[in-house]
Image (cartoon, rainbow, N blue to C red; front, side, top):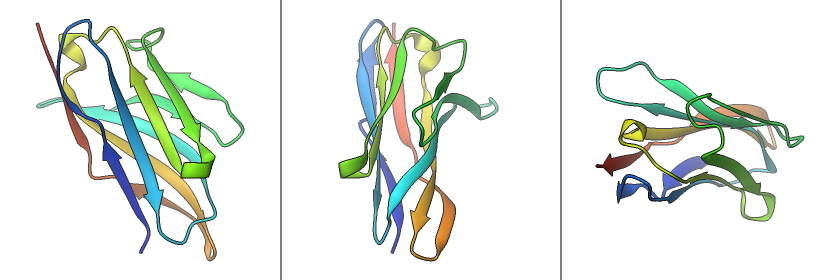
Length: 119
C-alpha cells in the first residue's frame, strides 16, 4: 500500500528551527513534484514550498529566505527545513506528492503534522 507520511512537527519558540519530513512508502518508483501546504485554524490552506522532479523550487513570499525544501531520492523523502520560525508559522503542515508507481503517476496527501511556534 502506498503511503505518504509526514513527521518532524512539534512545539518551538519563535526564532527556532524544525525540519519536517515527508516519506513515501510502498511500491513506488520515485517522487515527482512535491508541495508543502499549511493550514492554520480558521484560515485557508496555503502553499508554502514546492519542488519539481527537475529541481526547481518555489516558495511563498512569507517563508522565502527562512524555509528550504529539499529531497533525498534514495530515501523517497522530501524535507522542509524551517528556520527563524515565527508565531504566524503555526499551522498543520501537509505534503502533497505526485508518486510514480508501476501503474502510472498519482497524487497523494500525507496526514499532516502540527507545528506550533510560541512567542
